[in-house]
Length: 95
Image (cartoon, rainbow, N blue to C red):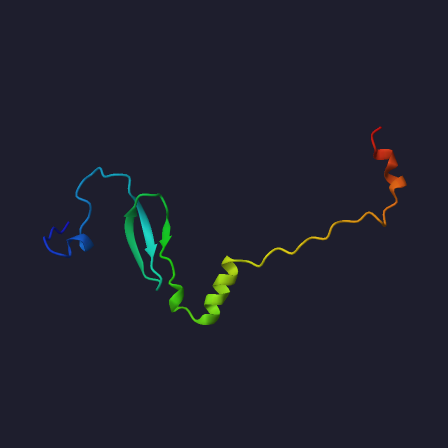
């Protein structure tokens, strides 16, 4: 391994010890699609950087917001028993 004592050491070097704290290899994906391999404290395969919504076009930003906050659920109608003949179900009632 190359051991340099300048700013490039972290980029090309490796961990100098055999045993290190629980760090797992992870692929970090930037918002522009660039990837960096690094060690992370949790065992995950891919970490994605959050997308800055200010850089998106207005239509895409609104579409993302609609996906995150869906519309309110519609009120359900209560079932009415007007069209049901109760005598046909009388045999299932417990006495």
